[in-house]
Every structure is written in C-alpha cells, then in structure tokens.
Length: 235
Length: 235
DNA sequence: TGTACATCAGTGAACGCGCGTTCACTGATGTAC
DNA sequence: TGTACATCAGTGAACGCGCGTTCACTGATGTAC
Image 1 (cartoon, each protein chain N blue to C red):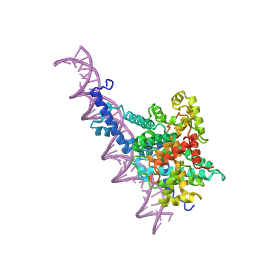
Image 2: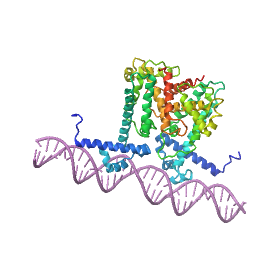
Image 3: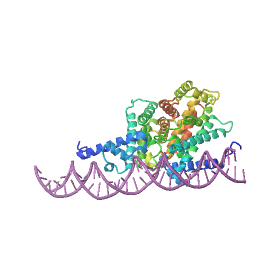
Image 4: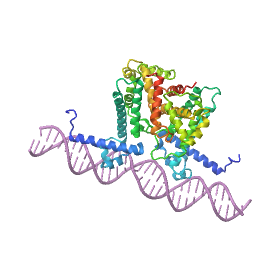
C-alpha cells in the first residue's frame, strides 16, 4: 500500500484527469476527433476552460493520452485472450481467439479503434512509443506460428520479415523469444498478415462500408483467419 | 459535337468548378478533411468567399462531389485494369492485376483513398449512391471467380453471400451476369474477401502503420491475394 | 443590327460561432518548523 | 498545536483566429424580338 499511498490532492487530481478523458472519449464517439474540444469538456466537468490546463498541457497532449490508453487497452485485451486459452488449444483456435478479441474490442468501441487505426489526425504527430504499443498488440500472435509451414503465396512475406529481423536487432530481440522454437521470420509474417486481415475486415465493419451488404464481420474475419491458418498449415 | 456544345459561360463555369475542386483536393492532401475550407479555397482561386456559393451549395456539397469523383475514378482504374488484361490471363493473374490497380490508385493519392475508405467524416452523411459506386469498384472482381472451388475456410462467407443474393433481388441482378457461368454466391464472396484484403494492406500502408517495419505493401497485398486465389483454388 | 430585359458571376459588409490558449489574480490545501 | 510559507486548483477577462453562411447590391453576359 505504501507505494500506492496518495495525498488526497493527488487522488483528486487523478479523478479529475480520468473524468476529463471520459468526456473526451464521449465526444470522440459522437463526433470524431474534431469534436474533442477543451472548452466543451470544461463545461461538462464543471470547470472553466483554462482550468483544464492544470491537467493537460494542450489539446494534443490530451489526444496523445487517449491514443496511448487505447493501445494499452487493446494490447491488454489481446494478452488476456491469449492467457485464457485452454492449454491444449490448436494454433488455429488460438489464432481465432486472438483475432476475435481484437475484433470484439474494436466493435465495442469503434471510436477508439478508429483513433488508433483510422485516418491519421492531420497535423498531429503520434508519440514515438506508438511502435512499441503496436508491438504489444502483435506479440501474442507470434507463438501461434510455431512450426508453421508457409505456403508459396505467403513465402515472400516470410522472406521479407526474416530480412527485417536480421537487419534490426531490436526487432529480432523482441520477436525471437516469442517465436517459440520457430523461425521469427515465419512468426512475424504470420502476425503481420493477421494484423492486415483484422484491419481489413474490422475496418470495413467499423466504418460501415458494407452496411446492408448482408455479411457480418465475424464470418468474414473468421474466414480470413482460417485461410491464414491454411496458408501456414496450422492445425 | 452538338451535345457537347456549351456556351462560353457554361464552359467557364465548369472550369471554375474544376479549379475549386482541385484546390480542395490539395487542401485535403495537406491537412485532411478538416483542412478543406471554403474561405481559403476562395482566396486561392482569386474569388471572394461568398462567390463560391455560385458553384457549390455548401461545404458538404463540395465534399460530396469529391467523394463521388474519387469513387468513379477508382472504379475507372479497376475497370481499365480489367480491360487491359491479356486474353488468356489466369484467374490468379487477373486477381493480382485488379488488386494491384486498386493499390496503385490508393498509394498514388492516399488522401482520396482515405476520403473513401477512411474514418467517416463526423456529421457528414454520405450520398445514397455511394453503394452503387462501391459496386462499380467491385464489379470487375466477380468474373474472376468463375469455376472457383472455395475452401472450407471461406465457405461460410459463400453461404452468406448466396443467402444475400437470394434475399436482395437488386444484388442478384447485378451479380449474376458478372459471375460468368458460376454461382454468384462464390463470386460475391471472392470479391468481398478481395476487398477486405485490399482494405487491410492498403490501409496499413496508407496510414503509415507499419512504417519502418520492413515490409512493403506490394509484397503484403500480393501474398494476401495469392492466398485468396489458393482459398478458391484458382489457377 | 439594336434595344429591353433576364440571368448570372461576383462583391463587401456583416453575423455569430466556438475554438485553443495566455494572463494576472484569488483562495484553498498542504508542508516545515 | 500554531504559525509562516509554498504549492496548487481554479477563476474571469481577454486575444486572435478562421470558419460557414446570408444579404443586398453592382456589373457583365446572354437572349428574345
């Protein structure tokens, strides 16, 4: 408890910060990034406009926080899905579960998904640790591809990823221990392809592209993921 | 020529409209949808602000025009790719060419791609003919899947599409003649999956998600498309 | 060819809006002795 | 426990901005006879 001990002031401060973010998220959900306005947030919290600057340096700082949170939250969802898999689950089932957790998270809160994956906010520079966050999401996918046998179709991606891991030591260090006993090139390729698949079908679903086109996102994503499993000869 | 004959006034009018759109597109490229501002456009064309209202009813009307143009342009690119295929091209090669033309178009002008496929503009209602436009893009994909044999992984999508075509007469009427001699359910499933694949890898590429992750979009997209061809047992 | 009228392009002034952000200041809460 | 000081939360006024859009009006271009 000692470490968590907080003065009442600090405690209250965290509460207010959280409340600000919460309202910002609601605005985001209702009108997109452009609708996130400090002035209106302040009014809702019951503060004057300038008071917000005690909690966030600027509007961009607030957005950055939201983005960081969203990444962390998505990564947590995926990790949790990985952890709660039954011990003997087949690679295919694991892949489905991981992808499904991504989709579930995105569908439940499309605005946050779009904040991460949608059109980049013009004039906004993403914080540099975004790459780390993306990795955190991708990490649990790597071990799934242990012992995979990539088809001719995906082999070029595998080669590219292998080359990348050879060129970038940090990546290799991150990927190797996760590619349990397998080639990290294969694992990386599988993960990136999975990511692309998810981005594809989730993106279409979230942005309502195929509304009324009679498909549902789950079927589509599952088909893509199963095909991916096929392409890597996973059980 | 008679039909095209225009009074100088009408001619000039079209010119100005085109110039306005051109500048709007530049603003779009530079700062996203939010940066498209009538006031600044007017300044660049050399007109006063209110004068723009002679050419577009409102800012939304202008955006609608840009969206319509983008759809038409993309559809034209895909159609042209379909038309310029060598006669004996294999389904796989045709699929690659069609997907490649989509990607080429998107990479060359990401802002227009994002206008169509990116985060929906908040508060902006897409014109109802958008669905038709999406179909125009998808159309050329249908005949590629003639005689395809869908794998178990993608069969659920095929079933769903079949059911959809049975339920929606307009769709059936659109799809059937294009699914040359095959089941329109299979063709629709193939096209939708192709679309999802493209959206996935192009989206990642365009929004710079995997910058510095050592893959290039072409390899990724080709791998996805080839896998799709595998899943449908295309030659 | 000339005249009378209708249409259209364009203007400047103005309205009202909400935004992010800065500043000098007040009052409450915490801290050191 | 009490006092003196430092820190922090919050305020109201103000700045400057650019935006979409409306309005009443002028002058040029087209059209009908």
